[in-house]
Length: 372
Image 1: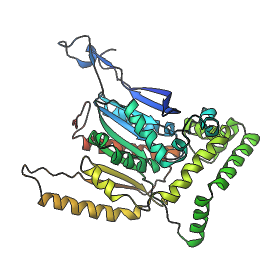
Image 2 (image 1 turned 60 degrees about the vertical axis):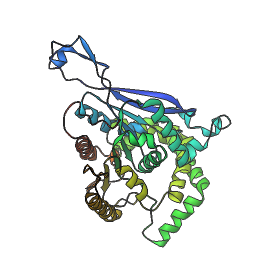
Image 3 (image 1 turned 180 degrees about the vertical axis):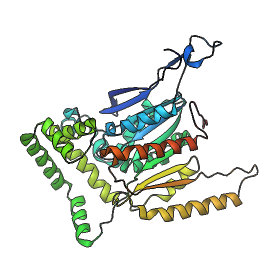
Image 4 (image 1 turned 90 degrees about the vertical axis):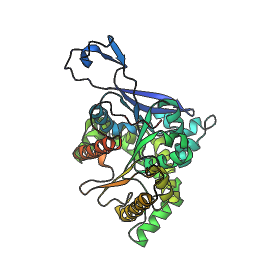
C-alpha cells in the first residue's frame, strides 16, 4: 500500500454457532498489519501488528437483525481508525437469509428454545457471543438499540468482569415497557401480550399471503415506494424477512410479547448507577417514541446531577470521583426505527462518534484509555 493511501476496514459476514443456535455475526476490522509506507517511519520493520485495543459491540433491537446497523458501525470504525474493530450480533432465530435457522420447532428437541423465545435466553446468547467473539484483551464499547439496550444492561449486571472492561455504553432509543395513551389502547396491548399465539398465527398467515401475492422484487419495490428502508440492502432484508420466514413470526412475537409483559416501565436506575461507576452512559432519544419515551429523562438527569454533586463532596483521599456522567441527546426529527430512513442515520452516527471520542479522552487514530 502506497504512502497516503486511505486505509479502509473490511466487513465480514458469518453464520456462527452460539449456544448451539446458528447466528448472523458481522465483523469490521482493519488488516492485521500496517505497512512501513503507511507509518512513514523508516525505523520500523516492514510490518507492525495492529491488534485492536477497543472493540465496539453492537446489540440490535427486535427484530434482531444486525445487518440493518452495519452502515453505522462501519462509519464509526472508519472515523476512529486503526486500533478499533466492531462486532455485531443478531438474535438467535432471527436469520433473514437462512429460513431453516428460524424454524425453532424443528430444532427444539436438541436445542434450548428459550434462547430464542425469551429475553433471558437472548441475554445468555449475547453473553456467550461476547465471550466467544470479542477479544478478551481489548476494552469494550457497547452500542445498542431499543430492547437491545435492556439486554446490554442486564448482561453488564450479570457479568461484572465484562463491565470492568467496558469504556462506554451508548443506548439508542432504549426500550421500556410502554404505557398506552388511553385505556382502550392499553386493553389492546394487554390482550396482545397475554395472547401471543393469536399474534403468532396472524403474523404467519400474513407472511404466507405476502409470499403468494408478491415476489421478493415486488415487495422490495413496494417498500421503496412507501419510503421504508430507502437503502437497497435494508429493503432486501425486510423483503426476505416478510416473504421467506413464516417461522420468524413466532420468534418475533414470542420475544416481543414478553417485552411488553415483563420489561420495566422505566429505565433501571440500579443498572444505570452500576454502569456509571465504571464508564460514561449515553442515551439517545427521539420525538413521539412510545417505545423509548423521552419523558423519563428529567428524572434521570436530576438523579445523575445529584449523584455527581455528592461525589464531588465525598471524593476519596486522592480526589478521584467514582462516578461517570450520564449524557442525554434528543433528536426531534427522528423516529424509533431510524435505520429505515437514510437521512436519519448520519446524525445518530455522528453523535455516537463524539460520545466515543469524549469517553476515550481525545480524537484521531489509536486513542486508548485502557480499563484493563
